[in-house]
Length: 188
Image (tube, rainbow, N blue to C red; front, top):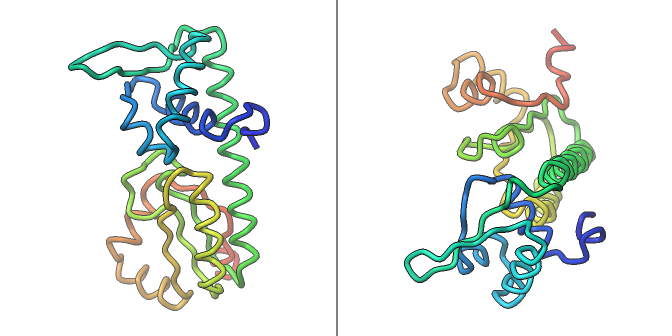
């Protein structure tokens, strides 16, 4: 969606990376790996963004580092726009997962709640078509700039693991998460 507004997929990926990590500086090769785009495309967009003063650069150890200019007049608006576009993607993902089968519980955690090192980003309890789910996750991988870690378990497995206070499950449930579907609670 944003690439239509900004004219370039590479620019959107760079903006998303810089605006979600405003304190961090990156060098060119690191950026090409992070956004998964060609170096010439990344250089062109960096030059453009630096030209409008949205990025600032410094040279350190013979490498040019780029960082978002938090003093830029549009910094907060662009950051809000990136966050809102992320929410739209999350809603689309949740809608897609709902269509995969009979879902009793759907939780968003990990990258969706600002905990990138969590064990899973998506917990799905119910009967789902795993092949279709894998294809859906691959589609969204492009939008989120990295793979979405997801866990699927049957209702029976969830109840068993919950009764044992399974560490993996307990960590997900006790940490920050967003409940999208909870048919388990309604059944009790």
